Amino acid sequence: MRRKLERKPLDVIWTIPDELWLLIEPILLKDAPPNPTGRPRINWRDALNGILFRLRTGCQWNKLPKEFGDDSSVHRWFQRWNQHGVMKQIWAVLVERCDELGGVDWDWQSADGAMSKARFGGEKDRAQSHGSRETGRQTQRLDRGSGRSVGRGHRWRQPA
Image (tube, rainbow, N blue to C red):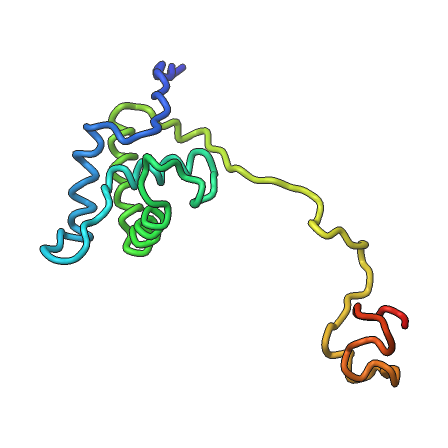
């Protein structure tokens, strides 16, 4: 019988440690080399820490703590890095590095999800409205010409 190696679980990281940053920074520089002109960029390490914080907590982008920089800029860099495949490259480096440490348990994985009622409810198997396609077949009352009620009423469909 083969025994499994005892592995010490890795600590949860909330910020990118120096040794990992040395592996990640060249990937970011390869995607977007520094520009000699134009506006200065935000601190990429802070932005990546903000992305990590966002992915760990699930908070909204506009609720990121100010220590990570402007939330719009962090989100913009996240989108760019995703579109250019940078996040996949960073992930590959981290998985490779983590695999060297023996910290990835490939037998156990988890997916996060939620099941709940439909937001606005509704009855099961009821007839569905076809919206604007039905308006041509409906007759309208004579007093509904402009969509306003007739008489003194000022609200929609309020009797006079």
